[in-house]
Image (tube, rainbow, N blue to C red):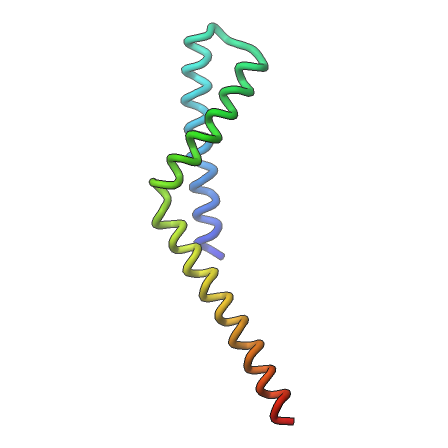
Length: 89
C-alpha cells in the first residue's frame, strides 16, 4: 500500500502545483477574474495535471500496478489452496 499512497500524493502534488500556477497566471492576465474563471482554471488544471502525470509518474504507476498484481496473485493462490484442501476431504 505504500506505493499506492506515494503515487496518490504525487498526483495530488502535481495537481496542486499546476492549479497554483494556472490560477496565478489567470489572476495576472484577467485582473482577478471571478467564479467562472476560477472554475475554468480548475478544469484546465485537472486536464493538464493528468497529462503531466501520465508522463512524469509512469514509474510510480508501474510500481503500484506491480504491487496490485502481486496482491491479486497471493489472493488467488490462497483461494486455490483452500479449494484443493476442500477436495482432499
